[in-house]
Length: 146
Image: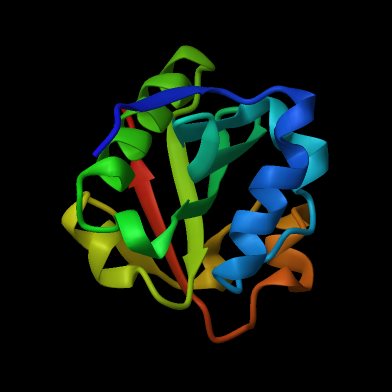
């Protein structure tokens, strides 16, 4: 396997991130507006993974965690996740929340705990994912970074 690198996104990455998310049936609404807080993993110049933050003060929505199927279970997701946590801390984020239909067990292993979506308050609830991009039955989870 060629070297995998992780880097901050640039505006030119929007199409590649969007394609990757669409191929995994993940929502793309709001990605363009928050692309500055996304990270991508690349192999041979091709985006093979992505993860993003929507920052709302000291709370951030972790979103769009995806790795191309051919490279899943090779540690790329974990590398993206760790880099994402480092980025969140640098931005002063104290609490991460997420909505997921498919990765509840994965994020539980990373320390997230399931919470009632209705218990989430503040500006993060205005995000595209909270206002309809994710189905209402999606698991809501949080991780305190303090």
